[in-house]
Amino acid sequence: MVKELDDMGIPTIFITDCAVAHYLAQEVDMVFVGAEMVVENGGIVNKIGTYQIAIIAHSFNKPFYVAAESYIFTRVYPLNQQDLPDMGTQAPLATDNLPASTEVWNSSSDYTPPQYIRLLFTDQGVLTPSAVSDELIRRQNFW
Picture 1 (cartoon, rainbow, N blue to C red):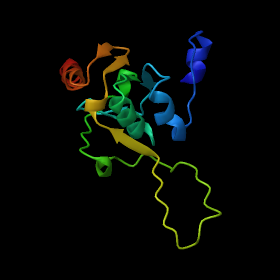
Picture 2 (tube, rainbow, N blue to C red):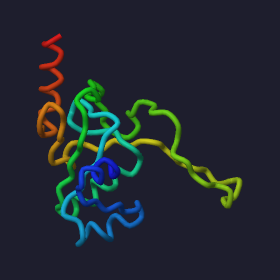
Picture 3 (cartoon, helix red, strand yellow):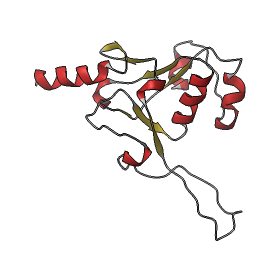
């Protein structure tokens, strides 16, 4: 997403995962993320770390926006992280320096509940998370 924004002349800043809280506290006005999937309740499934960024943004009262195409809207309705569909390979992780007995937890995606999302910017317009279900119903009745 950063490349596309830069190509359009929109100033962007890339913040590493471990520095999110530090910069969100004072330096950031809002957060924009993409999504791999927008689920029926208006939450999103995205790369691992999106959920923690949403929680941090919420705690600092910073708006958290999602940019997503409507073709990734789905009738999946996860209630928690364990309800996620398998999204493929895990995120790369260097484990060479860990003891052999260390268990590694490394997911590729996480679920961000709708209460952390202010608005979704889509090709169907700007939606609130609660409007996603209506959009899915409208689309189903269209076909």
